[in-house]
Length: 160
Image (cartoon, rainbow, N blue to C red; front, side, top):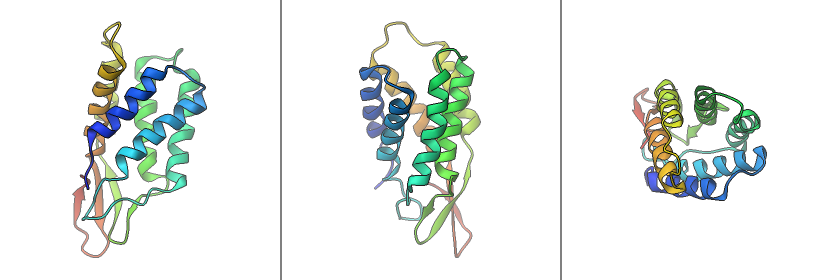
């Protein structure tokens, strides 16, 4: 399989259409949407082993962010989301068993910039689907910067 942006777009559309819940529920919804999208990624032909610890790292960071998101700036929100997504791959280091492990995520800064710009320039009255597509596109681009290293050869490749 491979990453399918539509899976993430659909998950985010449901979140945005439902509106605000508690910070914990919102964080869990984001984690579930991202896991549904990321679980079909491949690195050296195998999918990632996504652990509860990976999900918890992302959920905890997002819950903290969502408690304060409406009083923070767009750049704080963007940085918090990018940090949570990066933590997902590194807390603990995700493996693509039995052949590879995540060794680099190079798109975090670009994701922060893209999300900040998106949040600042948001069109009033935009639909949940249009918001989700914009954000899913940024997150999909970020996710494709996740690099895995083969245990035996040392070769690297971005996930797909």
